[in-house]
Amino acid sequence: MGSRTALVEDLMERFPQVPREAVFKEDLLRGGVAFEPSALSDNEGGEVKPKSYFIFSFDHGTLPELGEAALRRPPEEIILTGGPYDLRRTVVSVRVNPASPYRVAADDEGLLGLYLDGKRIADVGVPPMPEYYRHTLSNGKSVMEVAPTIQWGYLIYLTVFRVCQYFGAKEECQYCDINHNWRQHKAAGRPYTGVKDVEEVLEALEIIDRYDTAKASTAYTLTGGAITKTVAGRDEADFYGHYAKAIEERFPGRWIGKVVAQALPKADVQRFKDYGVQIYHPNFEVWDRRLFELYCPGKERYVGRDEWHRRILDSAEIFGARNVIPNFVAGVEMAEPFGFTTVDEAIASTTEGLRFFMSHGITPRFTTWCPEPTTPLGKANPQGAPLEYHIRLLQAYRQTMEDFGLSSPPGYGPPGPGRAVFSVSSFMDSLPAGEPVADATEAAAEV
Image (cartoon, rainbow, N blue to C red; front, side, top):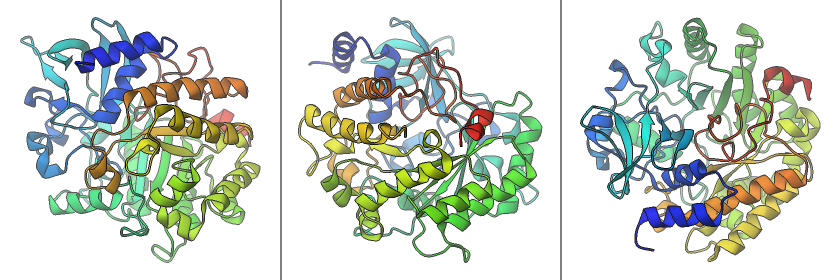
């Protein structure tokens, strides 16, 4: 197939059940997008909300390789609309790739557009600088550094531990660049707080709450690297949980509280619940046993795949199945040299995992794999997984949800093309738009 346009159009024709917006979104997420200087932000001093690098780099190059995009950050996200494909409003997380066939640039009238193979295919909207980003903490730190927001302002992303205690080739997940991302930001002289002080987090949230008058921010996620020992004298459940406790005491009911952590023993999961967390994300990363052992060596060594899955099921007894939402990294199933060599095999494996969890009422979600170049899998697979895999996964995901009578999980905003705000995969864009939006009240009532 001669061009990326031809590939995309072929897939849209072959899989008409998948929204055309999701086809473009998945291609941008897996392969990145280039930015002309006219489309970059003026960092925190400008009118456009800049990319915050909230946990991983989600780029196809290191900062020194990104050119001007490393000095003037690209937008946090973009919105696609219109164009020859008549795209409905589609929110896409920005993953920078100077070599991408997709390019964001301003036309002669200064209007931003997305170009593919030299043709303008969509209008591009960028997130305005939120008022709360214009204010600093009492110690001078920016709100963007302490409590950035993503998903078009829906989610406050609190990466309170910026590194991971699974360290080195024998422990780090093979697709994850959290530790490198920490190192590159420190090397560039950027502020990148390793362990965020709970009082700083609360102060940043006070600023957001004060200036977010439209109440666009609806949820927060507490996350960071795995803790195999302690951080600041606390084990993993206590470390992440004590932030939730402080937030819920200061802002009761203001946001849906979510935590991304390892699959922990039942007593530790109960502590999350006691601290006020409403949604638990014990990510299973990849379903296939052999690939889990190869790609997640630290998790296999400290916990093990079978025990990890048992703990996920056990956590449903505490949070309720609907509020246990494990993530997987969609695409690493096909990473060379160990992954599946055909899309059929990869989809069959991943669907097996979806059916396992959904048969227990647990609805996983996924992040589209970005092959970051400092990771082993990114180095070996700079092109990521085939676009066809991602499109067929969306089809399989929706079908499996329908098979088990499940609806979109709480804490992700509205489902459906033209409505979804979840920006790092298209699973919410691909679900029916008629579903009600799950909010904090619903999430709390279902446990």
